[in-house]
Image (cartoon, rainbow, N blue to C red):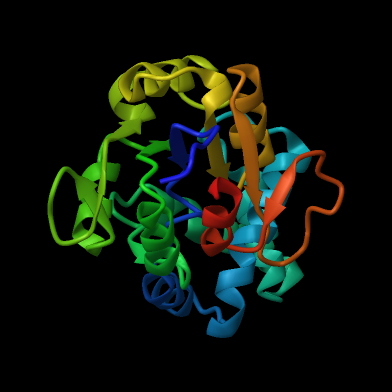
Length: 230
């Protein structure tokens, strides 16, 4: 194995490994009288995250996300607040973020193949370990998915990105220093700002090319991260 400057890869969960369950979202919109084009749901998430970044929203404040998500779906502008309310109700459902992203399995396998340990660092509700385990993508220790060292869930540890303290916890678990870690996330407001505040190198997932203004490294998907390690 060649020498590397990276000892650990931190991964966000939402927008990097999983996304909100599209079937459930479509069902809830239909029940509220909205017709949704399911092919737009993937992109809607990343437009929602862009809205969070633009508004510099606090952790777990999704008002701007919900409005942008609904707008991208082309829903009736006069009912946009109603559509956002549908999403707000869904976001209270534990386990909503259980749909693996198209690149998740391949990307995790590619990173694991480099031999560099993985730690998940997520703003969540304390259940992200169970949710990710249920997808079969990964788990702490040996199992059917990719083995990760730990899952640091803000709902469990009591501190959320962009507070650098959550990265300090992850670095302690990984047994390394900030200059030897990278963090991959989809939200500049939480992931890039938080990682930088902790001295960790940030990587922004930008599959739609929306973030050409971002002053950090960007990748189109998790699959591209392994090349940054090697």
